[in-house]
Amino acid sequence: MQSYKKAWPAVLPLFMALMMGLSVPAFAFGEGSRPEGLLAEVKTLPDLQTAPGTGSGLDLIPHEWRITERSLMRPDGSVLLTDAVHHVIWKVKDGMKSVFAGLELPLGYDGADRPLGAYLDGAADKSFFDKPVGIAADEAGNVYVADSGNHAIRKIDTQGQVTTVAGNGVLGFADGKGAEAQFDAPEDVAVAKDGTIYVADTMNHAVRKVDPDGEVSTLSAVSERAVEVYPGVISAAGSYKDGPIAEALFNEPSGLALDDKGNLYVSDSGNQVIRYIDFGAGKVSTVAGKMNSEYTQSTKALYADGGYRDGSAQQAEFSFPKGIAWSSGQQQLYVADSQNGAIRVIKNNTVYTLLGSLKGETGKGDGTEKSAALDHPEGVSVDPDGSGGWITGNGTRTWELIQLPAGRPDRAIAAAYGTSWLSIQPEMKQGQIMVPLRDTAGGLGVSVMSVSKSTVALQQDGRQVQFKLPENIYTREDRLYVPLRLLAESLGKDVQWLREQQDVVIRDK
Image (cartoon, rainbow, N blue to C red; front, side):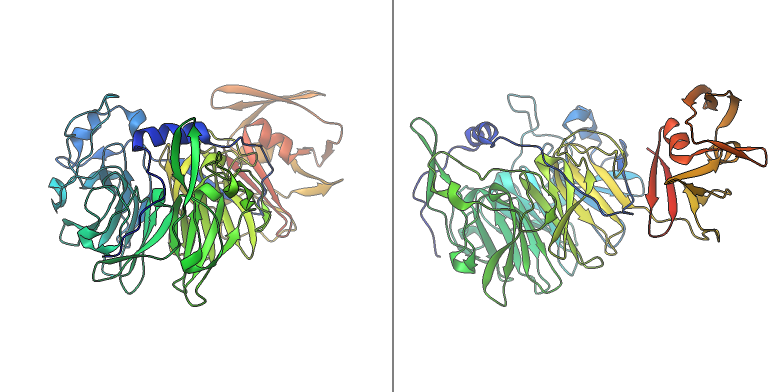
């Protein structure tokens, strides 16, 4: 067994959590961007009914503690969600939820009345976990979990048995086979086609590897940096270095994703960047994020400064990126940018924001790509064709890309609402799209109650909505034409103009 000794002792986990909360660098709001024509929607997972005998005891826990960490979409249509509060892995399928692995009833509660985790292998419904985070599956359907509170990598096989692949429940840092190995709060796993498991060993600031025979080795170098977080309180800290894999340095790596070449993306949270391990070239590089490594010379700074900026991958900025997911269908990487409250995309050396505020503001709200607000997303998953997936964190969500309805009308400009095209003929006048008022209102599900020289009154769901008429209205063939955007936005709807296709897309927020 090969082992490594850190230069400085680790701070106890609870103290570390407090320290991290107090040591996050100041954040400056930036500007995000989205490609024209990108249409998506976010929906919060409802409080699903629990299958009897498969976790119903956990329904007694207050809802505000139902926070998920990462998700795994499976070929049978089910989704697995890691729950670091209840210490279980949930399964969601056909509108029902059940406990896939872990104990249905808590063993007990801590001082904050939260369920306690534990460590036990065996049948899935009798096994114990402690703060499970990352989750992945191999080609045969076996599921692997980064059981961070137990400092171990667990396996749930296709027969429903839980075993420990590597680690022994004790915090530490050591290579070796199976139980001889030690980890410190690993947060993610990724499984290669040959069965090799890669581990984001977060608080050891390292990327590890578990061979199919259970032998654990360390791919990267080990940071020897130390930070005085408080007078007289020293903590081991991560660092930053690109180059040969064995010399590379990380700072709290928390997300992993394998691409089609079998190379590994790493969400290097403490460095605020996304790294790439090219096994063929034997090198680590930074593929996205603006990195200033000067902070690694400091004895006071735990992390690099975060920020928020889209555009060139080398100039892009993140703020504690966490879970990541590779899409083979889209050939792009999705990033849960936790403190920016956004899902970002890296493609063709460019970064853009898929979902969430373009100002880096967190919040809770469903809706379109423009109106949805995310609260510290921890993970993101994507289905094979890249058309949708799941978002985990403070609120479990689903997301999907929106496609235009089939059968576009043969006209210069067309307008779509919901799943159909409106039977109107929009016109472009002085840079604004004009539409017949009554026909368009009817297509949007509202009635025109009255029209005066300056005001229109509409009836919507039993309430009246008014808007002022602008100067550019006109009448033709006894039809009053008004700006489409003014009409739709007065009704609280989202409007997007797709310039290339000459289409207007109207959606409920």
